[in-house]
Length: 385
Image (cartoon, rainbow, N blue to C red):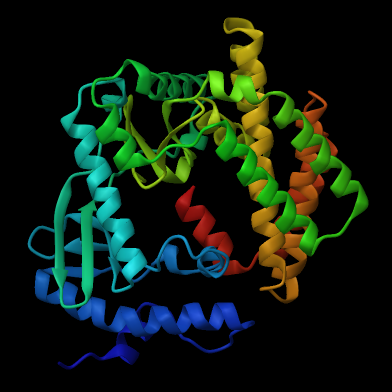
């Protein structure tokens, strides 16, 4: 089989020169090697890759540098030659990556078979799911949206987000006849699981950043989570999307198309809210505040506490993520990840004290972030958001 890897990589602007660190070099070599074969397979299947591939640039490699849970895969943009239909292609020869693609497909199928409110979300059309030699390819229709979520008016963002969370809350394990198949498909986390995970975040953070103020903040977080174990358990058993942020869904009219089905599990009903609100603490503080006000004014004090607890849990996770990344980076990216740890630590302190992060801290962080980000990462973020 003739696989002109160098010409493909050159056309897609993916030269493997000028690496800054080992993790990035390993990722780039993986991309170059796999892309040469995958492009050939796609040609045989009647598809063609686009020149710009935002999911391969910037800091994408770091997600695989710090985790062994999910396998490696390429996420590519292309089109079907016969009619020009734009598609998203997920392709991998990695055992973990194959399991992830198969699991995601199973999740979509289960949600389509069962009848409950989560079907408020739509799925992109599956064009092809196939195996070719060692490769598994999942090809779905690209969902065009006239404007991204964050480009919409605040009132529309609020309505869309609230409807999405209410839909998620419609799937509760204790009231649902398909409990066994759902739990076996999506997995579950209870209060003990959340506490154990947070203690592991704490351990990883302090191993890399032995700062006494940070140690005290994390200990305060653990104490609150421990003291509120019953609240975490009380609002458990809901199907929740643990990574419900704008780059994982698209909006067409009033419809939400869910792009990532691998992040579904049964857990606390506010875990998805927490991920979204923490994201908006940086990208859209007024939306974060509006959703917090909604919970405070329309739900019980215990539910407001549950949301706070899940925000603390998810902030521990993101601080741990960036603390682990620091040693795998160099230059501006290393400095940037140190700044990220400081920023999210500030947000954690604010959540613990029931206040908003200081606007001055937010603006200073965004200024530093924009100065330190690579051109490739800025382009990737622009395309994803």
